[in-house]
Image (tube, rainbow, N blue to C red; front, side, top):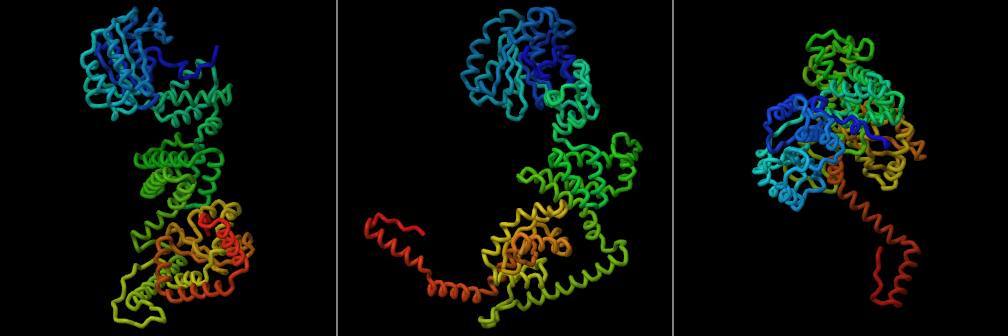
Length: 577
């Protein structure tokens, strides 16, 4: 006998065996027992929640000759034929492939014929939202005034696409997502019946991935049994579903809450290598952080839901605002995943932000913070530097620099945006732009992928937010995507030194690195062009003159070839550079 998938083999055959929809099944059973059968039903809800199964059981019960308290007996000829899909009075239609007006008109023409074997002729139209507007219009009259022996059951996963005129002519039942516990209980029952060993953690992972859909849960379980027929293990479930191990997620969360960025990055890198996806990691971090918040607010001492030893005690004293911030950042990273093919970048950016943002937020919110003497002196020095830079910017606004070749006029000073790039840094960028060449920039871009392979995990994320934008024979300007990273990288001499060394190793040439924030790059470049306009024009003119004086012999040879071609072929010749 051919193998049958678990979700088909264990499809419910009675109302009582449908999981998680007790209110709906009880209502349908009562309508059958009291003989109060409506002419049209609409089953709406997420995929895999029992809509089609419930429709088939209801159709079978309507035609059962030996009802058992509203349930089909599954023993009479009609029930057996219905289970095999051979009962002529139960017609199943897939609206996804039969969505035209002609198909619905055919139904309308045939509903007048009486059932041949049962009491009712039942039409089950699956994915009814796929019908065309014309098909819906053709169905309206039949739904409003059908023959007494006809029952329509419409099923859909997208209720908002079904016209209100259709919905108003039916009894609507909203199927809900099946709870995680109900999914686990059903899988345990099936595995016990199949005599297959399992681990509780594996069943929990499958139920979480299934997201409220019984069919999805059984499909994943089927996949695991194909992978290893004798048992269902936790490690196999993690491998097949791509779900991250819970204990590792707890360790990542602790690292983030304790501002241990490099450790969190390294653990996340290992999770990705083990098969987890960036979405899985972010989902689990959000779920775990939410549980930590709930435990804190409720003062719960129950640590059984955590895997890592002493995890509950470690996170109990963490500031709730920091956990709230982490959840917000994780949700933002999940949203960013939709717009990039490089899924690890939003994850890595989130890991860095969430492990440093709390300290930044605290400093911004309150100028008075408890710090040690060394940090206090650094803050004081930075404050003095900010004052100096602010004064310089104000002076530049009042007296903007002008080219030497232009005369000073009495025009009012132009208004400029105060950029985060320091005056000294701006001068370095100008110096690079004065001597920039396309060849040097191409050299840096060519070796960029090689740098990924030699940097450590915690340093590799830096390359994803840096981009070389200009290069001279001895320096390269790199714009930094995030201001936070610009500040961090600018102050990290060891990292810049290491990056400079690797660039020299791969390019066989020494380049110093000049960093500029992404937000400031365009302004800096435009200001350079404005203040060095005459100098740039003079250089360009000189290059043109040198080219004309030293035109290569090959160009003369090319000119002779073109002339000869024109002599031979006339106006048919089309010259392209």
